[in-house]
Length: 269
Image: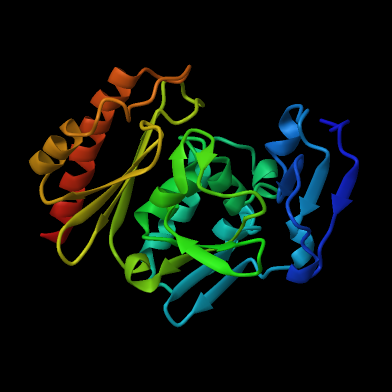
């Protein structure tokens, strides 16, 4: 879709060239959502792909994913074989129910910042204990987590002019056993519930997304304890939209979570 309200496109080549925020700004990464519908309040695009960030970097303590890394780059890359949790990358890409053509353009950071409940890169970041680095307009950085960043559907704690720079996944989480469960009300429908479980040294971490208005993390010790923990989630968190009602989402989440944790327990024993 053409965006007829755009007057200016800024292509910064260095951080110092990123303009100060102004009303009507939009950050352009992949643009797969931005160009999918009219943006009447937007008159300037800031194209952060011009900054040339390396898409992926294996570090001494994990993996750095640039916000501009495309879904395709994430799932096509090679990683150390002991990083078994990287199996989630393709599964989360598939959960987007998007064409491979979209994968070539859509970015990890864009999926996160859009903050849709069904955003599977959100689930990935939550499950693997991601640390997000955010550029602030004054030239400093701040770090946060996915559960702090996203406060509701299409709502985040990003202030005007702040730009998600990278997502860091720690090596500890990348080495741990993981499993994923997803359900939708149609074969190619948007996720109604998307859960990822991770086995830690002390128990199990469960990331709940799509079913709730924002990502939730629960600690679990057994399938029964997992179901009990889900029953204590506030009714305000369960999300209703055309892809599922809140009560249905709560029900299927409890079932999937119990099954997911049971699988992780069985693998451990």
